[in-house]
Length: 89
Image 1 (cartoon, one colour):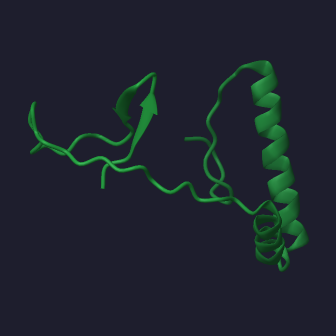
Image 2 (cartoon, helix red, strand yellow; image 1 turned 90 degrees about the horizontal axis):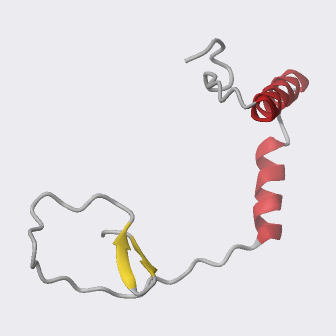
């Protein structure tokens, strides 16, 4: 199903339109249920997921976060490879 947002009274697609949709195609639009976020449940699940991470994993994550913060402050916008892969992309 196509996802869209209502902005200033106009429905704006978030996803690309299917190729077979032509101008004038009849559509049915329905309001999506907003998923409520339970921040405490989210925090508990993150704690559980991270409970067995090694000290090396924690250090790698901390270095990556600090590097991204440094780049953001300097405005370099440098992209790095995903954690654990090393190098730049």
